[in-house]
Image (cartoon, rainbow, N blue to C red; front, side, top):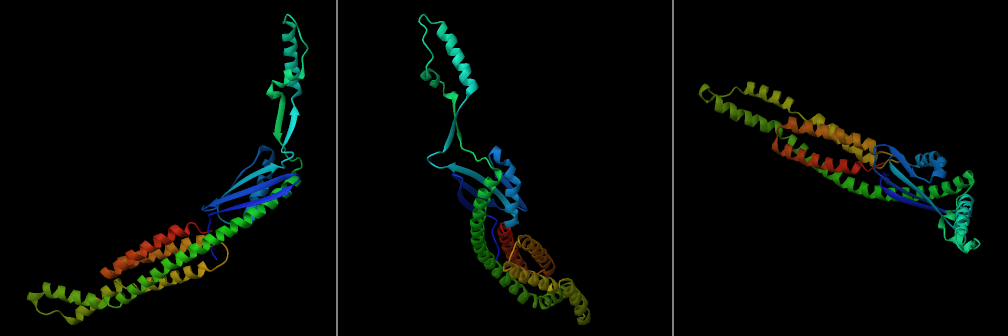
Length: 294
């Protein structure tokens, strides 16, 4: 069953006092392109993340967003900047000496300087432990992403089949009309020749048959119809195949469009030309939807 390249997935794992959250967003793309938004100290995980995504997905532009949250009782680590503390203490001491009545430096004096105390989001220390948690959250996110892409693909398949059924109906219309084209051309040619040669006598039936046969051969679209029907059948079969099939469907649509153009040029019949225009419109709708299939 086909899958869409559009989807969203989320995974969440608690480990080491932290809750790891991985969010994935994918859109259509000709190839697989993975971009990740990671904190600087986790850049070393980027290749691992990319490989894990590639093990599950074949096409699409995938954005990976990684975040974590600490437990409520210890969300932050708090530290004192010793160098800045010493510098500010020295400045306050020098300032106190200039006062008429110097007073000792107290703790509340230092606490007025907010930059002395640094609060940082608690970060994991062990890279392997971090990867174990991240990979689990990523696996969950990939699973939910694939479910969504599968559901989108099922809806796409239904729409594609509807358009394909209309293509088949127009093809039958062309086939029915194509059987009548040689006779119509014979009648048109006879009338035209009678008009041109009215003064020279009746038209030679043998010569007329030869001319009609020549025109019929030039305007014979049976081979194109057979190939077009074959491409339509392959398209339907491909929709039911497992795995990535988007590129094959794109190729089949190109071939279907090529055969349709040839039929329109060769047939020289208004009804067939109208059916070809309808088919080309349906193929364009199919092409737009197929671009979102993995």
